[in-house]
Amino acid sequence: QVQLVESGGGLVQAGDSLSLSCVASGFTFRQWNMGWYHQAPGKERDAVAWINANGNAEYADSVKGRFKISRNNSNNTLFLHIDNIKPEDTGTYFCVRIAHMQAPPTIWGQGTQVTVSL
Image 1 (cartoon, rainbow, N blue to C red):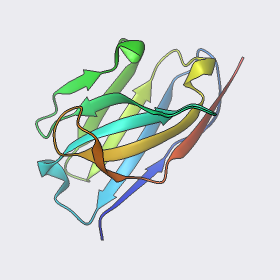
Image 2: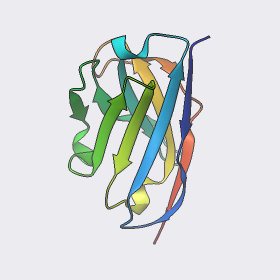
Image 3: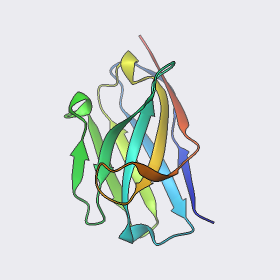
Image 4: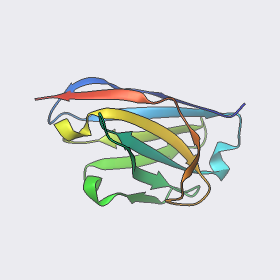
């Protein structure tokens, strides 16, 4: 069974840093491109970062310089590190599996909630 399980969300203060994790199972993680989506309250899900099987990353313009996506193929884990977190980063973060960079996801995790306070 293909599964993505996110963790690391919570309540943080603006300006803090936060790292999210996603553990993958049920498929050969190292062969797949992966990504993160963000869904702010009352809004649609937006892609924020992608990483290919080789570790090359791409970012949405809105998060460049603050978000860093990475992966550890040895333990099937995807990461998203956020620096200088802002109130607009509040929302649910989803780990996704994608066939190609910036392509629509084929598999979604259940999400992890992040709330940023002033």
